[in-house]
Length: 224
Image 1: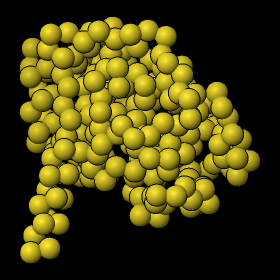
Image 2 (image 1 turned 90 degrees about the horizontal axis):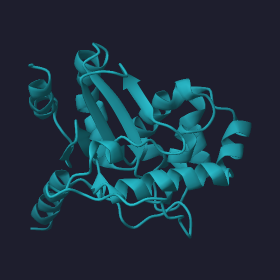
Image 3 (image 1 turned 60 degrees about the vertical axis):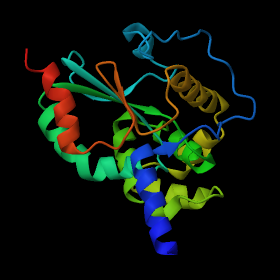
């Protein structure tokens, strides 16, 4: 009976994604300087959705691609890991690398460990950002825990070429921390409450999409 209950709970979590309202990167997060007004459909305007944060966007693909996919992600979320292991490689090969999609990743850290890992992905050279994201998602079991394990986080990040000096500096960079908090606050204003949450040319989808589901959402924007 216990096993059946556990399986049911996991199935519900798989549909809902990871909840993201219990964490802030700073004890007193700064309010964003403006307010997003959601439309009658519950969605933000394109102008509001596309406003980049103080650190700029992390993106892949062609800047003027006909489709823009924004993913709000927590590096501790198992559903984000599933998407990036099972769906992302084929999505990248068939849509991002071919110039059909501009793919943007925005931080929505759930838990203090996710907040610390998010700091690391913004640390140092920009050309290793996506390598760091990949390392953290693939190796979740090595660093994710209720208590922040700084040494474990650095051990996962080290193969990217990140030095210990860079790591230690970034972990103390309050401006970087405040900027990441801005991104999460802005996500909440845009209607994000958990991960993964996608905006596909403005259409909001909160679930870990399979390749077939993602393809079905993308192709109508590319048929004209």
